[in-house]
Length: 410
Image (tube, rainbow, N blue to C red):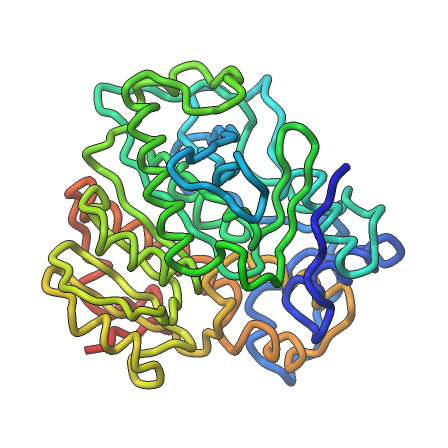
């Protein structure tokens, strides 16, 4: 196994905390999530529930089972000087989609095994991959085909993160009839290539890891979506694709979303590429050099937490250039990691370590974890339904009693 250098271990990051929790799980049983009791720091811990074998992700709420497949992609228009002469930008991507039948197909892990091992090794534990979460996706399951092609959304992860860290949101969209394509941004992520190479985040100023590089990755993945829609397999290894995937995607209904740096990349890509009909940022700082510039007349939504327009001039400037449909919401009590799988995983980590409610809040904020999961399942779906499918609901019209923490920012 070839592994590129690990990032430094300075500080207790979200990644290292989760890795340590998984490591301790070998000796300490994981208890099931206690739910809203975590909202009160002074509340006594409830009695432990039966321990699952691994950390758990919530089941998606849509009517369709979920299939998934990985793609190995190379963008031959972008030389990769860091990899050496003759090399080009290389990416792994994963397609999530509504499946016709999943019974005979294995369940996909949260991260590929080799990448997850590297993830654990980064925090000093290397033999505990069996505790990693499983997803709702079934590898290679046939695509559910209907008279209409599937709308497509592409996802960009944050800095030093990985393409699975928003699986709750991604598999939710797939269960409701979307093809969601997650991108592993090489040199700033944990990923595994088909030949066994394991890549991890680098701290190299020459590495192509700026938001503009992420945005270029997103636009290249749109090219690959168009190839799939036209019946062509973009996988450079020509691996077999799930039955029904070729020709099932709709290149006329494509959107993009991303978290943190991926949210900034989503804004950058949406400004540059009219194929993106709607863009969603999950607490993106909108900080680029050169700055984001130009007016955008297509729908864009911002789910803010830390990088609000009131505290981040770049976010305010980007908002001022939105000339089409726009919406900015904020979940009260949310922190930067709140719009992602952390809200499902860290309450389990807290139970594992016996954290107090305050210790858990120090990591994921005061937003109730159960409410946070429901927010990330409901609002992105409502946004893309309205702007890619023209299915207008009422959730985006204003405050909802079902989501009392969500405020609409003028």
